[in-house]
Image (cartoon, rainbow, N blue to C red; front, side):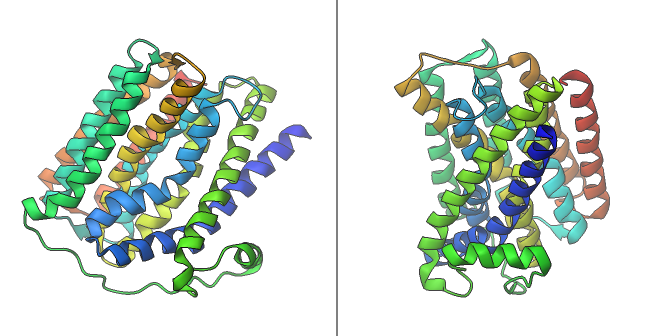
Length: 351
């Protein structure tokens, strides 16, 4: 019975995350980007990436402080970030390509990939001794600041056109359970598409909701791992990672439908840069400042996934160059197939 309750709690939390993010959080982020007059790729790499990655951030924050599950859960947060990075780079870009083939502008893609490779190398170095110290946590946060500054300046340094929105997406009409859940959330959180002046309130309240749902996810994953005697890092790398990436998937699909392929790719890559540098850097920094001298990480279970992530990025860059920065259905299928292979690998090596 406890196992069934835990599974139902996880599925309910993931579904609520999807509705909360799609109908409230992403529209609020998009409204902020419009007010700041950001280009599509800059908004995708920063605001949309940071906003849609909120579940991963809160999962890592809750896990690293051991606030759920009654034990040392730091590897659950780290595993979620690493697994989410693999999901983002393969499934989200692949799904966006399946949805609508696009020709990417090389300038923003090169920018994001350079920082992403640097981010992965930093993560490998941090994992090398099995613990995270204060200087490493500070360096992660500082490099993310440099990334955001570079994103804002990049279009001035390398002249390229922004991609105009081809169509507007109206508020999604939900039915059944989805509609009931939307109405329930709308009692507390204003829909920024219907009440655009309240987008700041929508943003803040949605963050609070995402934080609460992330707590449930971490707590129930630890419960299931204990009941089934499964390595919780395995669940974090796969189930929780894919679930918390739902907002990233939704965000990329929406902008791909609008014809902003560059924004979809920048969201996927920018989300990974945010997840690793900020999503891990801030929780590590906070716990090291207030309660610990170092954060222990299970390198045996995580390093191989990070190395695979680096290989995946190199493969994607090669694919884009060979196809002259075009990404379509065949490329999308290849990327999704690679993710399935990754899950099989993790199942045999970590679980």
